[in-house]
Length: 362
Length: 128
Image (cartoon, rainbow over all chains, first blue to last red):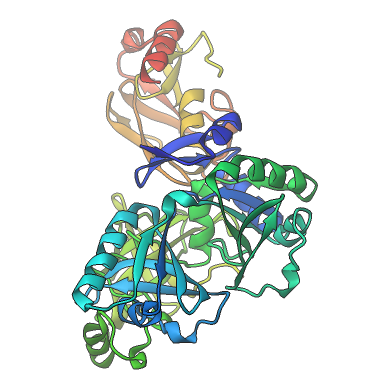
């Protein structure tokens, strides 16, 4: 099992550690609900060093990335981040990623931890088969620790430790700068929907920066947050998680990510399959699910309309903010109607739920 | 962690308090801690027959779903009506306010075969 540079810090904080995607990670410190609410109301600090990073450099980088990803890389400017996907030719998803542009010849992907090796191998294969010159792929995952500082107080906390003018950094933009005297990438991105930053920094500095952030954040209510709350936070916002809402069998269009599929940008892997799906209409669609009865939808639970099974739950939890069961589900398109009442098969019972708009919370 | 001496315990981390032929059942401090924040509890109805070793209820935390097994057989005489509205009681008071069901035992001696507190603590130490 791999460990992050913050492993001992988590253990010193009394975190409960679990295996996740081949990594030993903290699932909770004080408790999932408490951590979740702290991020919504104040701020939380997450170790996301397990995430992978791949650099794409060289004069052919832009052209290669246009072919590799579904979003339009030509729209990215220096210092901007783009949410995107890598697809197979059949339209299924290799991974969902964020793409960082430093300049026209220097990009970096942030990829899901468990997919890092698969993604890197896929990128190498695509590059080799494309015959493109002037592109270098480097798996730089070991060069970066990653700490996410998320929540409405994140700006004030980070400002205590940096002279970077954070008010000039827009959503989905990044810059180089020092935090706690350590040079790093400061990115205004995240997976909680509560605002904040993701910091890419040298592994050897991770523990010191974490401790400085915790210290600076104490007065603002900053708490360490584990993977448990990371999942409930993203679910309340309706964000997809690879392996659940997105898989090699589910296309970004089915997953409601049509906005990152730019069919008009030119050729890219999966374009033909996705264009065909778009013109004929997808057979199943991803929807939000909110329980009308007490109970919690869980991954794999069936969804019914009358006696007919119309879909399956891909993720679910008890929403700590709303205190009701919420989930994401893949259902037959004809039944994917907002506010429609459906039933969730929970063990030996059927519980009422409605198809709901996401995000579930503002 | 707290393990009252007057209780009997199971390998699946339920506890039983026996008073003559009535057995009160819940989950142990170890179980509630391992589960994390409990957010949902499903209990049987009064009058249901529960069978030793078979699931009689469900406890869900934010992350996980866990069956709760009947330590002994009997008929459900009372269920804790507070729990569906306030499942977090299982975290805050696993042995008192967080009790789950009371059953009238089919065999009053059945609890003798369960673990006492020393045996249970040894069992936990082994699981860790």
